[in-house]
Length: 132
View (cartoon, rainbow, N blue to C red):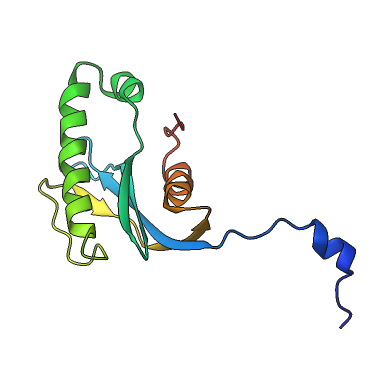
């Protein structure tokens, strides 16, 4: 098989070198409904983990009206619990403080840094996410 011309290969973007994994964090907006919505993502790399909430205050207000504040508090509670648990290096065995919370499958990622991986994860997890 012929190799690619060096000129063509030189035009390809350089692949990011920062590797990590991420998972979506889902909640049921109506308990026991089975419906779920992505509320946060957690990303891991060799140095640790971070959580990014994917629903802005304005999106919460649009989606939940007068209940937006309560929903925001529940998301904060779950995101904080995920971050504390994730400090151990993975989400294996995570028990949410609220019922109706599930985790997406772990996914591998590459980016410029952990924040970049979080942005990618949020964009891939929620149609409501808007980078601020």
